[in-house]
Length: 71
Image 1: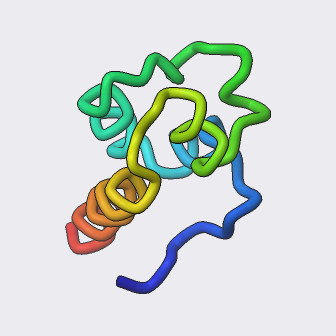
Image 2 (image 1 turned 30 degrees about the vertical axis):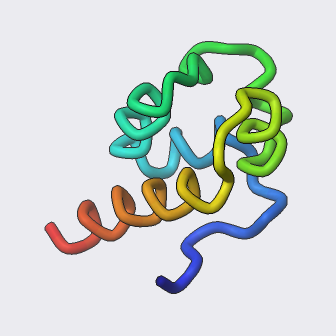
Image 3 (image 1 turned 90 degrees about the vertical axis):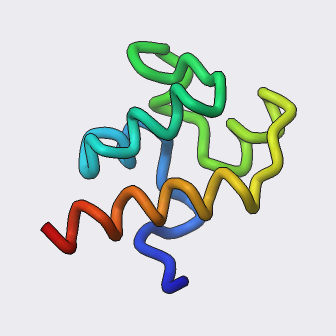
């Protein structure tokens, strides 16, 4: 799957650019929505902080973005 955001983009920027990713964040048990740290954490950092599989999180985020772009 082609990346839709670079490695240095923050969780906050991803959720603002693609609101459909908010559901993915919540489904992964993350509370990044409204968290002040989301403005600083990249996907890698957020996955590590929450003990999540980064590859799985990235896949799900990209899938949500792809679905919105198909609409």
